[in-house]
Image 1: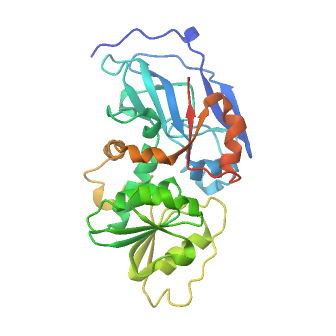
Image 2: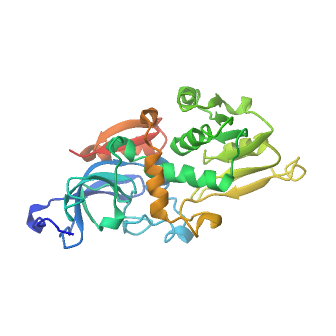
Image 3: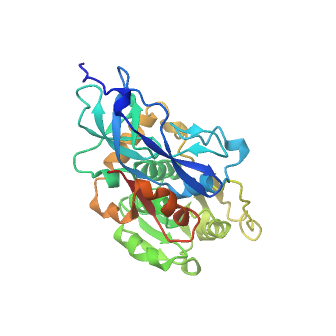
Amino acid sequence: MTETVVTRKSDIEAFALWYSAATEIEIRPVASLEPAPGLCLVRSLASGVSRGTESTVFSGRVPQSEWQRMRAPHQEGAFPFPVKYGYACTGLVETGPDELVGQRVFGLFPHQTHFLAAPDQLHVLPDDIPVERAVLAANMETALNSLWDGLPSPGDHICVVGGGVVGLLTAYLAARIPAANVTVVDTNPGRRYLAEALGAAFAQPDEAPGNQDLVFHASSTSAGLQTAITAAGTEATIIEMSWYGTRPVELTLGADFHARRLTLKSSQVGTLPERRRQRWDFRRRLALALSLLDDPVLDILISHRIPFHQGPERLPDLLNGKADALMPVLIYS
């Protein structure tokens, strides 16, 4: 394996986005970015802002008990603030092993103009997947893991409560199971066209279908989880995908919750389901998630394209719920 000559440290001027205080974002220079043998220097092309998790980070709602577990793979700083966060970046390899130089890659790296990575921390993008769509890979992993936890079967009636990016990707995958009948439930009627484009039906909460064989919950609200429980059929499973941070969850578990023998099961992308751990690892799962993005219809999930340097001004309204958004993508020029 040969390697190209590395760029001198003085040639690299890199910047990163930081959550500097509650509801405050700033861009800071990267203090040290010195290429070394065996590492790749990657110039970022696009990075996805995962609204569910990053809004919790942005608002300072990461519980202290989760400060270590919720660290992003290449996070700098510490919770609550300041932290350099993010885990969905695509870029172009500028220096490193010859077989990677010039390749478009995905990595679990924060929002940063350049970064260093070991080759095994990068995934070469399939030729037909554009760099902006590829930032959905981390969310696709979450959706994939939830289906592994839920064990859907052909012909199942499946309800997905919460029409954000993760919920819609879950519905997209479930709708491709033979004869499955999939419905996305969301309070926002504007999500109907998204659900239908991805192969699912749509309903608002008061029209949610009942007697479902399997229910996924991804709205991150108490009301949404209550809707998911109501939609589940007798002895069905509700897969809880939401992360609430420090927010309490209020539910009514009286009535027929016990009589229907419902199962409420958590799903978390940070671990693989036990029955797959002997054969699968995180790298194999991420490679599969990337391959599942080979469908142009998924581009509808990218709601905002924001130049990196405008992130501190434009992201707050997308993270605090004041503006409707799915996947904001930071673009690096």
